[in-house]
Image (cartoon, rainbow, N blue to C red; front, side, top):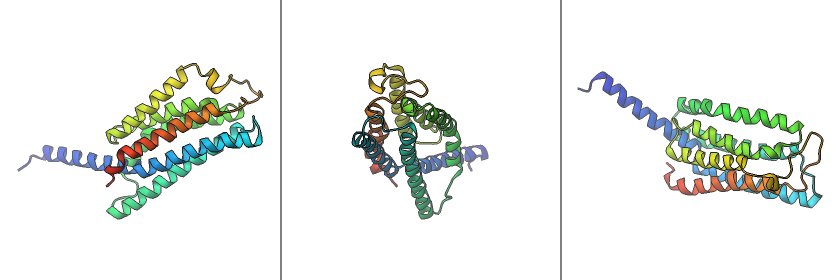
Length: 215
């Protein structure tokens, strides 16, 4: 007969694996595919829109609204996928592991949100793009204990890309740092391309690499 302590250890391992599977499905290949496509679409739209109506036409508010829409659409679709999958499996919609992972990622996401709100008033949200990338990577890494290894790998890619962007000489890429009330850079191709390359391409690659593992 298996000792009580050993049986409890086995149950903890099984539960951990089940919770990781839940988080894996929450950040599944279809959700990553949607996020990647929306991010690339948003990047192309912003660059086209500015050229269509003239330079300096993308305000910080518009930039935030477009990328906020991408974030919330992706999150909403992900939640729909989680609910459908939970119903199919007869599991809770929001599991304990999912709530734990969300709490782990919340500080990084909340800090990025607060900084974004402050930057809107300075008309400099586009200069937060490297920080968005870095803090998204931190949020994914914070979920590492509750998620499979592929999520941590994706987090490291975002964190390294964000760190390189923040630490690099981006004056020529993002434009000169503005002061309050100053005009925007003539075009914001740099921030748009950076968002498309990371949130777009990284998620598409992740979806391609993990698609066959869907359950």
